[in-house]
Structures are given as C-alpha cells and as structure tokens.
Length: 299
View (cartoon, helix red, strand yellow):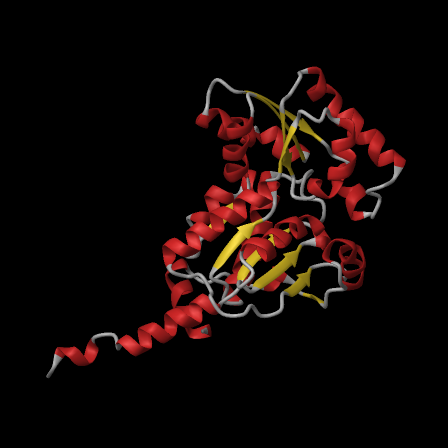
C-alpha cells in the first residue's frame, strides 16, 4: 500500500486555505460601541468580511460581575465559532479586561482584545495618562497594569464612567446632561494634568467632539479601535489569512431589538443596516478539540 495516498492533496489544502481566508472576522460588544472598531476595519482592512454582534439585550456590561461577563463572552464566542469566523475582535473593554485571558485558552481561533493595543499606543504618546472606562474596566485596573508593564515610569489614572454607555445607547450624545457628566468624569484627570487620554470603552469615541471641546488641545486622544485593527491586520498577515478578494456585505446581529439598533447606528454608519436578532444563549460550545474540525466542515 502506498502511504502517499494518505498525504494531504495540495489542491485541497490550497482550497481550504482560500476558503478560510474568505471567512469573516467576528467583532462584538454590548452595544453600538463596536461600530468604532467596524469603521476601522472598513478603513484598514477593506477586503475583510465582517460578522457583527451587539449584546443589546444584556447592555450595559460595565456594571456586571466578572462571572457574568465571562459567561456572556463564552456564549458569544461559541456562536461565532459555529458561524465559521476565522478571528474574533473583542471590541469590548470590559470583556477584554475580565474575560480575554480565560477564553483564549478555551477556543481555537485568534481572539484579540482592545486593552493591550490601546496601552501600547498610549505609552508611545505620553507620560501622564488618563483612562475613562466603564466601572468594571476601571475597577480591574487593566489599563494601569498593561501600561505600567510596558513603562513603569508612566503615571496612570483610571476613572469609571457609569452613565456614558447608557447615554450613548439612548441617543443622547449631544444632550447637555451628557456634556455635564463628561465634565465631571474628566475633572479629576484634568486636575492631574494628563497629557494623554485613552478611550477605555469602544463607545467613547462617539463622544469625541464633546470630549475634545472640554480638554486642552495639547491632550492626545487614544482610540484603541485604531490599534486593535492594526494588530488584527498583522495577525492575519502572519497566519496567511488576509482576504485579497472583494468583501461580502457585513452581517449584523443583536440579542435585543433589531430596529432599535438599526435606528441608533445609522448616524455612525451612514446607512441603515439590515439587522437580525439571535439568541446566543442557546449555543452549545463544542469541545475545544472539535472546534477546528467543525470550522473546517463549515468551509
């Protein structure tokens, strides 16, 4: 018997790789915050197809426990694996802070978080760094730890901003009350004479015009979305998974009301997305050893 019959056929390997390259990148957040990452994907990786999920039924994440966040993230990742994604960007600082390291060991796909890319960018820009984030992210000290691991000489202050995500999700970006709350949250950072501000939540770049009008022009603003997508581009290149063909239309899914999400997101997307509702809590996560085989069978 000729052993060569059991060797992988080059044409089959090429076909599988080509199909995997065409697979989507999954991104998720608790709400519309991941739109800031989606816009960067469109800008930096225009050939990549995207699967977008917003967990609007369980919004906001910022006041949840670590156990709850970890469970939510597992459910979302399990569903995305079943959809055949080739990579996931966790476009949620709270999830990145509380669950990323745990779930990376549980799934066989590349999973990128926003905190480390944001921390690296901040250290390159300043020495007195402020971070505005959800209470869960701020309480985790994830940004402070990441920044000071890179450069222990940098000073870092983190401020929890519990009202900002609900205000954004309620379409109150330009509300005078929103400006008042931003001023209150920024006050201790301004007092510390920060030279750099990190958006520790993917929702917050949507408040950039208001934040910029309050801070000194000398304060540099860091949007981790820009840097996590750059990291994703490098990872795709390293793994040979960059898609060089035309991207397929983005698929939008939410756990809550599709119409509400579509109406809220149109101002930042420039069009009204087609949005479907999905219940990710019914997804059964396969054993890790079976995930790669399952993804291959979906190709």
